[in-house]
Length: 222
Image 1 (tube, one colour):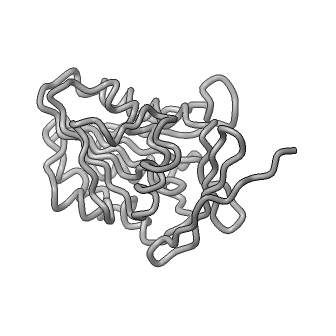
Image 2 (tube, helix red, strand yellow; image 1 turned 90 degrees about the vertical axis):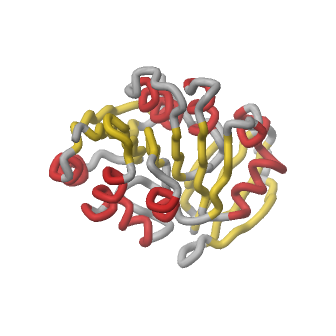
């Protein structure tokens, strides 16, 4: 078996260490022995962006916030499904992840950071939600979803307070999309308690195979 090649390491602020490795044309980011993301499994992330933006009904001059750059697949799907007049901000907490995209694996998703519609916010997506809005869509592809893995600070994104902050910073009819590795009935209930109209969707990691991931599309109705 071909061994993994070590490419880089980064520390999540207040969290664990990320390790980027490569084997042939496959890239993997792991933390503490757990694979956080792999370049071969990104179907559900693409659905998050595609279906989330479709729920906006083709509105013009959209302002879209993506929480988590990762390997760029969510951003690529947003670009492919957004109008040419859209403005997309991707918030990434770890600066090295931005550099890895530019230096190592950006080609996998068609170099999304080179698109003129894209700007990068290096920092906590919670700060971008409050400080850079309002947004027509907020797409959270952060950590492991509401059941955080690498950073306990992400819990505040999915708390009632965090969800109400997202709602406050959405335009009327705006969409909050959330990706998760697991189903979470408590989180579904919390979204509804915050006044969102909620759709819960289950999608295979590679669309046709792999474990099922959960997506929530929460619409601001008032």
